[in-house]
Length: 280
Ligand code: DX5
Ligand code: ZN
Image 1: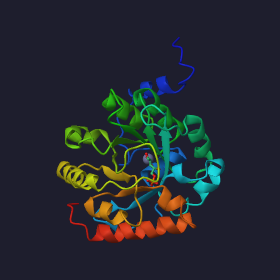
Image 2: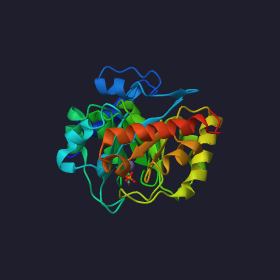
Image 3: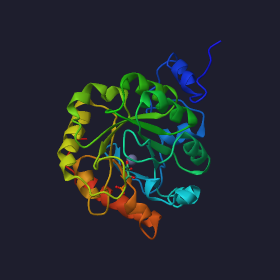
Image 4: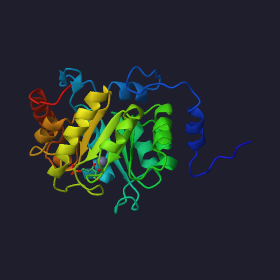
């Protein structure tokens, strides 16, 4: 009998799931659990605008919310957002410590919308599958931290979640081109990861344009997410450069009315997307 690691009870289960037939996340992936349905069809709220297959998606980051009232803070945006972005930081990959799997498991019961777990941790190969097994709709690992990204991304998908790959501002996108078939979302950090409320880094925008071209050229069904400093001042530049999933922490939870802030940001992104020049 194989003994499980007590501190990672779901690791071996995710590993075993790799043997199951490969199922493409977000493209008709069969699923029975509610979180799978939500992951495949995020939000689908009436305000969504489809533009040649592209749709703007909003992912408020609870990093900027009141951690003592997480369920209420999630509920404040659940009717208007597509995802709840959850920043997991381990004080090693980034110089900050936030929350981990137990809090994510608790949030899953109360969030009211799919969780987009952004793992800013060392050794995501070891820990990421458990977030997918717990029911996260998307699990993003960082390219700088993963030692076996292909295996880990496949394990995330096999466990029923969308697989995201994140890159820091200084990490180039071109060497990752061959990984596109393995991922459902590419996260381009527009600040150095670790803290909310930092100024947006415009230097990432050319890379975002190149990422959009790469995705189009390869015909990949990969969402492009921007995270960090996304606000009413910067979201249009992101949409124009090719982003379609927008994380916003301070701009949402720093506002008097978080739901209204999400709607306003979405409107800006949709209008900018409609005029964007990138290929679809
Ligand atoms: C930063 C996190 C972000 C953060 C963004 O490392 O990954 O998700 O919450 O916060 P704002 O939107 O305030 O820059
Ligand atoms: Zn994040």
